[in-house]
Image (cartoon, rainbow, N blue to C red; front, side, top):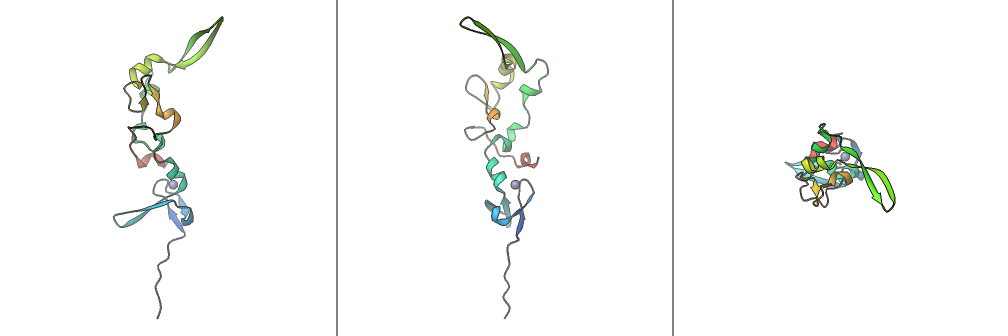
Length: 131
Ligand SMILES: [Zn+2]
């Protein structure tokens, strides 16, 4: 009597990057509406980073063209006077302080470190992985 064995496919498509991956490389599978969803290790590593956060679509700091984003600042250190480049504080006050991607009271940006792990605003957006 023949036995029907349904074999898993050897290549499966990652739900995020849509690349075909050998099934042995797949990290997680989920079942959604009866369909198996696969995630490759690369995409799995990006989950909970800014790359997969819905809020990183636009950055008002970078898209505001009214002022340069980086300005020269003169810093005095003892007898030395140095020129250094800093992020424009006007733009930080205008955009970053109230941005959900910033933390602390200086408008420091989670996006600069590409991590949302410590970010309370992280919201998963699958379409961001498609680039
Ligand atoms: Zn993938």
